[in-house]
Length: 214
Image (cartoon, rainbow, N blue to C red; front, side, top):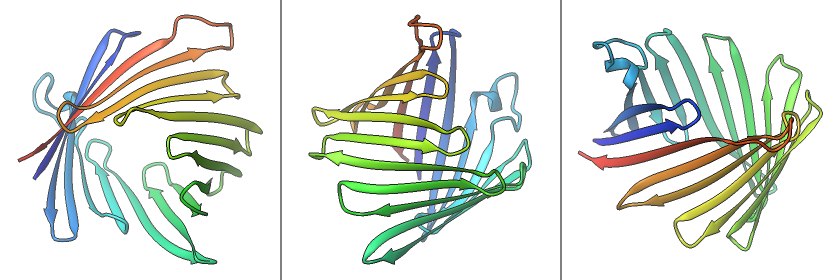
């Protein structure tokens, strides 16, 4: 059995939150249960509780207990001119939303992704380019908003990544620092700048994740 503990702190709101996920292997299928601090604060409750069954690379079924909502996810890979096309179909019963995702892997440095929500009339296109194995460029275009987003990330040393993403529709800039270590877990510090009214103090959040074998 594997366990994961995630903690998050929002400096802007001065609030902290946490979540725990337990995973069990049952052959090729994994069983997961997750809960948040809302499940145990003020006495045990169903708030924040979710269970899931998934087979990596094939399917996943998630059930949100308090909302009584199912989410289905199906994955498959086909070949187009010997290039893998990864397909993902997802459907949420609660809001009756169906999404289709496709990613064509051209080579180890280039891939193109398409995301579409059925009935929305919207489509998002993204191109990913990895330069030298350390720097990643991700321009994307959203049809409904007629807007471009840009993201760039770079590996710093072996376990650290710096990432910046800019959304033209909201004029927001997100800067993230991520690190992952088998000894101290994973950490992420984010700063969100709203540039619509000029440069101001950003909203800062910090997240940490620890994985355990039980």
